[in-house]
Length: 254
Image 1: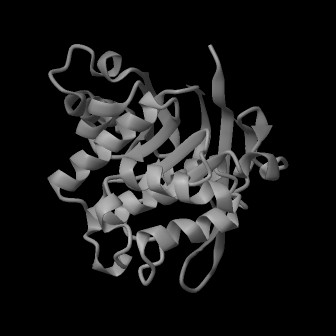
Image 2: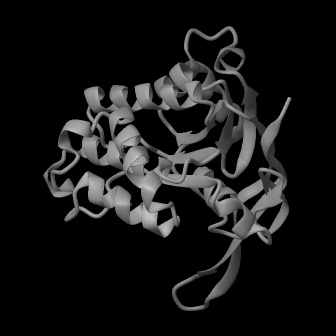
């Protein structure tokens, strides 16, 4: 069993000021001692409500945020200290419509990011064509991104995230704001990435998405893990994963 992500007792705290007149320092525990591992080639889910700590966790894993304490390793390297060894081997896709240049075509967007990753010119065209076909944008490759729908923009973001042929693709709420057709198309692409041997770590609060896609997941609530396993094992005797999730949150909030 090969783990490509190892997290142990990971914490991230923020200092904030509380009070309108007399300012008092307050420590906010965004991530509070979580531990999990991700196997190579699987789709792994971080499930939780808004504010649960999902995005903070993924930012630490992608070297964008330093942990307060604990172990946080990707591909055997520390995410804070070995950043340069990790960044060329991963990529990160945001939800929504950020991350691409809307006044460029899909092809020109991918050429731009190919140059940032120092991909040789002789490899760029073939790789770009393959990726555009994968995300079903080949027929609109030379149209400006500003003419695209939300779903097409999100597929272009996935194309951008694949341009460096990453070992691990991190996705933060990838289907947010998409209509059902666009969301299903995106889920189909995620499954194709798994078939191609990629590891995908997905943050979401969409329970149906987790049940359909994820091999394993953890449920985070207020910075702590409250359940882990396969979607089926977490669902247990409940009729749906949603029923199990609601029950778990009630138990820890009681």
